[in-house]
Image 1 (cartoon, rainbow over the protein chains, first blue to last red):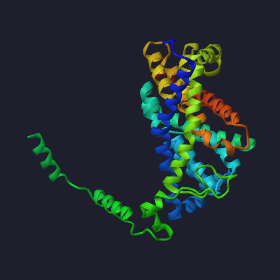
Image 2: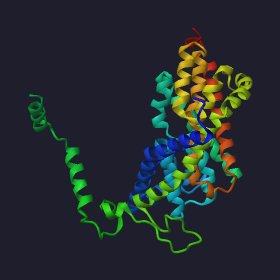
Image 3: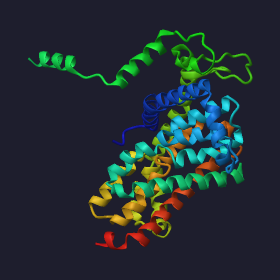
Image 4: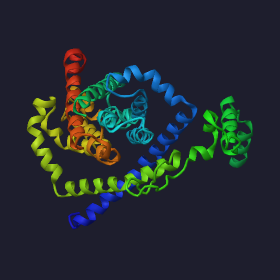
Length: 150
Length: 219
């Protein structure tokens, strides 16, 4: 077990990274980009932007930033893709991304983690709402903190 | 026999209205009848959704993904561009683990876990692992509970800690790296905020279980 050199270990880790990339990141990001493309083409992105503008303004963000948070619930990688796509489209600025980035992870991949984490540990499902509530509460607080720092 | 049964079943299968709508949508999207369409209707064209690779007009700003791309193709190149950072981050974490870095982190953490989170020091390994991999953390927590090392209350607090920003370090360093160049603060600042908020979240749960779950969980 210990006859592995540091180089072998690094390569093993890099391989894990490759698998994460191929199996999680690329499919999720691709999905996020296509969703944004559809929302943009249909005009729904601007609509969502207008509807959520008052809420997101509390955090110093444009209304469209709600898309980053919604997609975060499904996948962290997807939310990063959405944030990147919105930045490329000129909707989000660097300061906006700075405000959003901890929230992406704090409320990220919740849907998957209900099963992968809470299910595996054996947490009673009656505690799922409070667990979700804490995550979202954390994300909201983090956006206030990042707004001061950004 | 089996084959025939399957065929019969296939013939009898009822097709829901959703199925027909899905088929119609697929035909529309792949047929290209809206290929030249403008406005929202163009969202029903496969080629438009595939988008385009960016072009390298300006060597100083454009990466290999180019500028002005969109849709699935732009997303793919963007995601492909993430892989080097992900592979590098995972490689480094693996080496740190191999060299005993995680054990060191666990040793440093153990004495402060009780005051900080209200969970015993024995959860140190699981805690450090959970920062690296959500699944590893979950598996180890399960074992800690099953072997009686942690109580039901401690399990809930510890789960709340892991649930928000799961796999923190690995996830932040891998997918997050795509956004690092846009940040207006050093990349370590959001990571510190993440870890602090995890502790805050766990303590909200700690408060909750001590206030509201006294009777049911003490037995």
